[in-house]
Each structure stands twice: as structure tokens, then as C-alpha cells.
Image 1 (tube, one colour):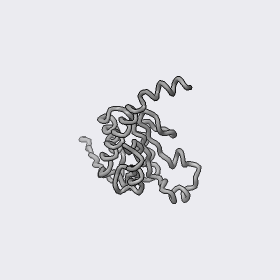
Image 2 (cartoon, rainbow, N blue to C red):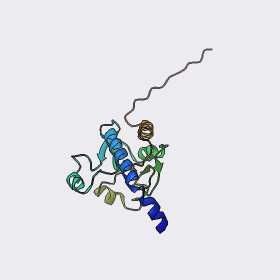
Image 3 (cartoon, rainbow, N blue to C red):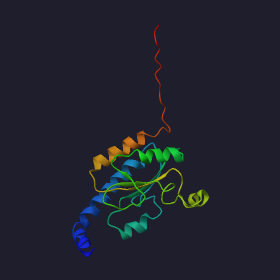
Image 4 (spheres, helix red, strand yellow):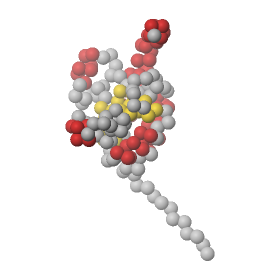
Length: 163
């Protein structure tokens, strides 16, 4: 274990730099996205803990929480399950990008009323932004959010058979 800690500590600063830079780019990308209702990232001045984070951190990290606009439990989990680069996982904090749906994962055993009191709603997703290429991460976010049927007018073509 000590060997692994010593080996990993040598590149920790590089991994944390990438984690923070990617986290900021993801947060800024999602800030005004039409499918996002709320975003929680301490780097934004309107975050309730921004001043504390600014005093304690050089970067604001890669943990980003979002709520999907007008999405119910099934819709939110469907979006969470449609990622290709982000991995759906209960445990966050690895070097790879991970996504978590607290309602069905980490907070699944807590009664709904209790969860909602602390902001863990059915449409909440938590992202742990990793060190992958930022263009790949943003493309994955976009394709997953496009999977959402909420707020999208879908057209259907009607084909008529001759005869």
C-alpha cells in the first residue's frame, strides 16, 4: 500500500490540475444549458459556499451537481444511463469521469421526504469530472442530455402506403 501511495503522489498535482480544469469547463458548459435547471459548483459566485471555497482552494474541483429541468425519476436515470465516457457509479472520486444518481444509489435507502429536505431530488445527478480529454467529456454530456425527451418537440413522419 505504501508503495502505491508513493507512486501515486508523484503525479497527484497533475491529476488534480486536470480534475479542476475539466471540472470548471464542464460546470461553465452546463451553467446555461437548456436541459439544466440548477447547477452546484463552488467556483460560481452564486454558490452558497463560494467565499469559503475561494479561501481554501486554488481551484474549485471537479465535483459538479446538476438537476435536470422538468425531469422525473425515470427520465433522470435514463439520461444518467446513456453516458458513454462518464461511467455510472455509486462511488465518486476516481481519476476517470463518473456520474451518480443519488436517489437510486447513495441515498436510495433514505425516505423521499428526508432526501428532498436536503436537496437530493429525483432529478439530481452528481458528476465527478476526471482527467480525460475535455472535448470528449463535453461531447458525452451533450449526447446524453440530447437523450432526454423532456422539453423536446419530437416530430413524427407518417408514411402512407400506396395501393
